[in-house]
Structure formats: C-alpha cells, structure tokens
Length: 388
Image (cartoon, rainbow, N blue to C red; front, side, top):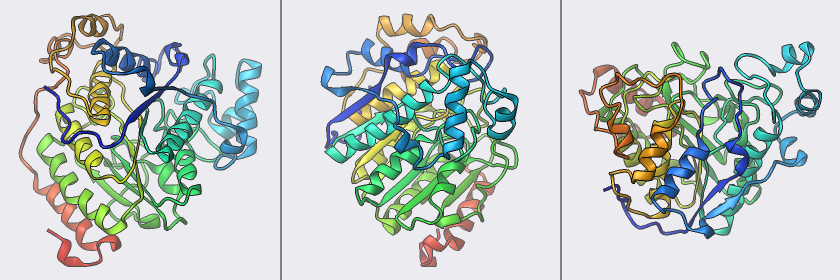
C-alpha cells in the first residue's frame, strides 16, 4: 500500500490538457513517448482523481513569455510553426529544429501550453491549493535558445508569478540533470534559491556548471556519483533538505519532479527506486509551507507513469494499493516503446505493481565527502557546526 506520510493539509489539483495525447518531438527522440496522458490514465485506472481536482491548462501569454525569453526568440519560434519548418539561420542562432530540439507539428503551441499551465498551477498555489503541472519542469531553456529538449523555461515563469505575489521561493530540483536554466535566471534575486541534486556534469548534460563549488546566487548544487542507490540518495536528501529549509525559510517550494533518477530510465546513471522518490516527496509535502510540483525529465514511460501516479497520491492525500488495477496493467502493457527491455529482471513486475523493489546499498566515501564539503564550505551553511 502506498500511503502518504501525513494527510494532505491542502486540496490538490492536476493541470493537464488533451493536447498531450498528440505525438510530439517527432519519431526518434527520447521524449517521443506518452508521459502526461499515460500518467493521467493510470491515475484514473485507480479512480484517484475527482473532477474538481483536474484543471485545464492554458497557453502562456506573450507578456508572460517576454518576462524571461527574448522577443526575437519567441518570434522565431512562432514563425517556424507558421512556416512548417525552421530556417537555417534560426536553427543556428536559436537551436530550434535540431536533433536535440526538433521541429514537430504543434512546435510552438505544445511548449506554450505546458508553460502557461505551470503559470496557472502557480496561480492555483496562490489560491491555497497544492498544484501539479506534469508537462512542466523544462528547466534547461535559456532566454534566447532552446536547450536540452526544453524550448520554454516554465519553471522560471512559474517562479516569476509567485515572486510577483511577494513570495520567497525555494526551487528544489530532483531531475537527474542539473537545473541550469532556472539557476541562471535567479542569480540576482535574493528571495529565490535553487537547489539541485543531479548527475555530475563531468559526464552528463549540460556538461557545465552544477559543481560542488558552483554557488551562483547561493545556489546549492550536489553532483552525485554514478550508480547512486536508495541509501545514498536518502542520505543526501536528509542532510541537505532540512538545512536548506531552515536557513532559507521559503514561503513556497517549487519541486521539479523529474523521474530520470529512477533505475530503469535510459538516460540516467542512477539506481534509485520510486519508493525512495516517494519518501523524499512525502517529506517535501509535509514540510513545505506551500507547494507547486512540476514534471521534468523522464524517458521510460512506464516507470514515469507509475512514479507520477504515486506522486499524485501523495500530493492529494490518497492511499493506493501497490497492486495495479487490471485496467492499469493493460494500459501499461499496451505502451509501444522501442527501448522496452523484456529481459530486464523486473520487467514483468512493472506491469503488476505500482512500487519498485527497494534498491538499498552501501554509502560510498565519495558521496559522504561531497556532502561534507558542501555542508562545510557553502555560504548558506555558514555556521560550520551544521556540518556532519
């Protein structure tokens, strides 16, 4: 049984749209998989969403987009959709229409919808609810360029909406990749703090920044070694989360809940279970004064849908049986995905249970040393008695 740590103290809403059932990113891309639609269908197989908990997303306005992205970039983006392709000059300048950020039908409309939905979710948080915008979390996009599968930086726009309301924001990034675009956007804002636990950028995208000694705007970065297991990730979170929360004292937490930290994910180098993922989320939900949850990376559709279904259960205060409903099992088994590995040891179990098998392991000295360095040297933890 998947149980929340405590009953949800606020109602929760899920922000979605029918557009996410359409194909995107072309046919040969890690994100050319069902994600939001599959998650919603799996949630509904449990009967775990009431009509009043679902909100229809909306596109971002130009005014919102221009709050972070350059006018020239947005114009080139819209121009490409209107023309049905990207001009070479725009491709070179804006990194649009590349293998990483390909052209596809709905090229501008789909990212704009995801971005506006995250802003709408931020507005729901201002109304007093917890909100989940699973199509969001596109944390790499730059003001004038698409980067790392991200065309528009919805976390930045959502945080800007919360900041306009006068709230002090902690952005906590669980994605396996460093949240570089969000970090860079708030370097000059003392009332926004970014924290990211991620694959070491020596071997993973974006291949720069995110190091132990990178503290722009007091950003907290913990690059994790390859093959991080449940025990190691749990330790890293337990050491950092309460200290960051105590020192920064946010009014609201924005959680980027990318699932590419999970062991089955083809783009991750970690070995984390969804049970540990949920353990982290339970504490964040319990201790955040207000909470906005965004999606993010995640390139294994079945692992992602199971993980985000459990995330939704925690956000909305539900208990779900570990055994998947028959309709949910059929739903996941019907997913066509070219990287499906029927020889994986837990292949069949993923269609039967919402929960992964735990993945505990030894805590390596390398991880402990990184934590100790961060806790001793980072200026946010100036009182060195906090170091373990």
